Length: 578
Ligand SMILES: Cc1cc2nc3c(=O)[nH]c(=O)nc-3n(C[C@H](O)[C@H](O)[C@H](O)COP(=O)(O)OP(=O)(O)OC[C@H]3O[C@@H](n4cnc5c(N)ncnc54)[C@H](O)[C@@H]3O)c2cc1C
Image (cartoon, rainbow, N blue to C red; front, top):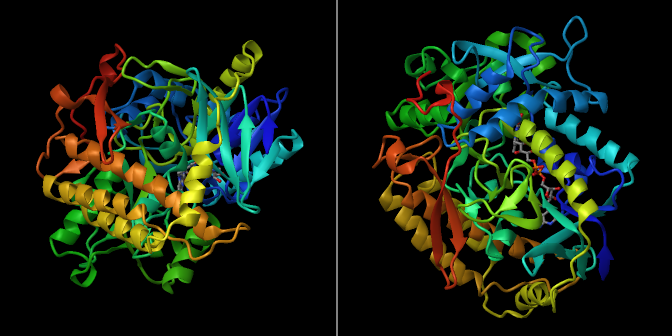
């Protein structure tokens, strides 16, 4: 089936919908493999950062400073400036579109503390996160979806995009599988935006939804587009023990504390100023350190998040959802008991490289690929560098989703549809047919769980050469095994086994780029902590990794690209002390 639109947006999370809202005069298709309001943005809990200064003095420049420093200086500074400056207006846009934020006594948007967000260039915590209880993402997604429906955006729900179409160096569409029927569809557009989210499902313990399989990154990568800084993957300190489901940093923003097995409030010892509200890479490392020192609960691999002292009223008002998660998943009552937690795979700082207008750029000279845009977690602009601050992803979605939409509006006004490449559905049809016809006897579930265990064991909070080499061998083996996947279900309608097998292919691509980048980066920076190279090395490594898929199996080519710094001494890379 063939469809023609001005704009094809893949992904109905915060980034995709924010872009769609900027295009009222264009014909826009939004493709999503899950129902729109099931996108992972709906799971975001704690808040969205903007220096509104509603609770205490704040400035966008302080926000920019925290973002650059929090990212351990692997941040493109002009992009961080845009993030911090435009956050303010973007949050007001959401408010005006109807988002029910929590309010201050005098009716303004309420703000709470979050890790790494400080006043006056690092002096102490500041209230910068705008929030709707602990379900901010849910409110954002519902508000945006209602606006998109009002604006007559064309939704194609439960369509799994398989391929990106490029003709003569211009992106002109995508090919997708309609999950309900098993049919292949082509969507022809003047511009394509990928807003497909992250790939947290590569790890066993993760906060990410089942759909976070790295689709957009892998599809671009297979088409010769590099993936940037994939080794920079964030582990959030407070996932529910074993399950990984997130207990938002909002719990600590409201005063919750992390305790070790001896009941000691250990963050005081590691980070005297920010304590529990130090950036996530640091808190996760401190937890792992405590566990390695035998200070986990009963000597095991977990510690506690304690909110008992906040009292039942505040917990019910400010943290209703996450305390319910503790009750439902662990049978623990947070009002009277501490909650077992451990670091959980959470957020991709890396992704498809873009410029500040969300245009995809494909080399170290930042050459744009015309017609192709990426925004949200799938993209790397790069505002998060080596470590993202809490509440800075939702801002990224709305600021750069909005910039993508605005740039696309002018691009489609100036450009016509490019013709589709010949046999444009062949690649996708072969991908699907091969899975239907294979008799290799292998199962996607087995490969996926081996991948997730390997990533959790060797590509986690702490890394070293031996572990990363082991992970590479495992991935190479799993990629070979993938060729032998055999489906039990040969049906066409809602074949979830087929969908899972295709998604596993995406996950393997993202994992491969992650491990190669991590193995090559011989320093410690942000979330990438190497036990065998414990220092940050600005002389050799203040640069972005670009991973290109090689021509032979298991082959990955790495290139590097400069980090953009601005000429202001306050943002000059220095040691990251808090
Ligand atoms: C539990 C949790 C809590 C969080 N809390 C916060 C927070 O409080 N503050 C904050 O700033 N950040 C938070 N984050 C991070 C933030 O929520 C995410 O980074 C962000 O929502 C990602 O949004 P997105 O629009 O990029 O993608 P998503 O919301 O993940 O949406 C991806 C979309 O792409 C579609 N898609 C993917 N692949 C395909 C394909 N092949 N074909 C068709 N469609 C496809 C999906 O169907 C979906 O619609 C949290 C993350 C998690 C997991």
